[in-house]
Amino acid sequence: MALHPQAAAAVALSADATPNVDLTLDQIDAQRTAARAEAAQEPREDVAEVRDVDAGGVVGRLYRPVGAGSGALLYAHGGGFVFGDRHTHDAQSRRLANRLGRAVLAVDYRRPPEASFPAAHDDVTSAGRWLAAHARELGLDPEDLAVLGDSAGASLALVAALRDPGLYAAAVLVYPFIDPRLRGASFETEGAHGFSRAEADWFWRTYAGDGDRHRELLTDPDFCPLDAPDLGTLPPTQVLVAEHDILRDEALLLAERIAGCGASVATMTYPGMIHGFWRHPAVFDAAETAYADTAAFLSSLDPQP
Image 1 (cartoon, rainbow, N blue to C red):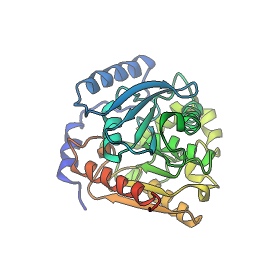
Image 2: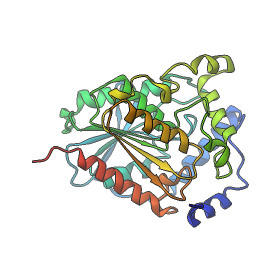
Image 3: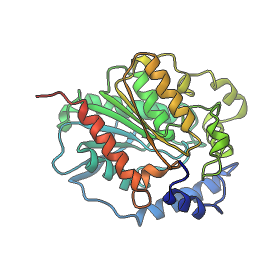
Image 4: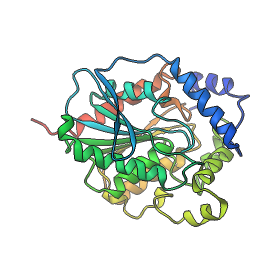
């Protein structure tokens, strides 16, 4: 279908935004500061507990909703690896805890250009291992851990699950950013909707650290998890896809490859939606639909009494 009216309005509002391409460190810092200031004004839902933790040498923020069960979620935020932190995604982490009814550990992973690949991947992996090791003392069930990431965070979540088969009971990948080769046709057909091929390429190259290293890393399955040979080791996985996202095709191909390996995968496509919709329920009604879909997916995996 065509762009949803809410998506069309969002695209129009961002039409004059400066693309995230070839930014200096000062420009990156300025954007990060502005994003934290904007996030500070965002309404925050109440939860029973919020506290920062040392998750095995990685900064994390733990959220517990009122009436939470014993399940937990490791959350890797999006932002092209370069942007976002536990402050900018605080409201989203609270929503996840409340909508999913489980504790959420949001990982404040290292970012480029200060820390290049595999720093972010290693931090998310380490935080997940810490959560599993300390689950019982936190009052959580180490057998009921899920990992979720959006956009670049989905790459981190996917690799965390691949590195530790059996650690997670489920994985949720929201419009995953997983192909530094940028092979999907949707990069050409959907590039006018607020996220461009040039930006995607810059994010990947910035995370790699330099051009030569970027080329070398294209064959590393941690850097390019779309091509990972061990997708069949994944736990039951949900892939959320925005119809008019430049990342649509790589998300769909990932789901196809997971299924082809014999693993369980559920694909949810949100008609008329664009990249970023999932994080903005005040703008996109489909965001709440997506949260409900993920809550239902995780509930379907719970052992039946």
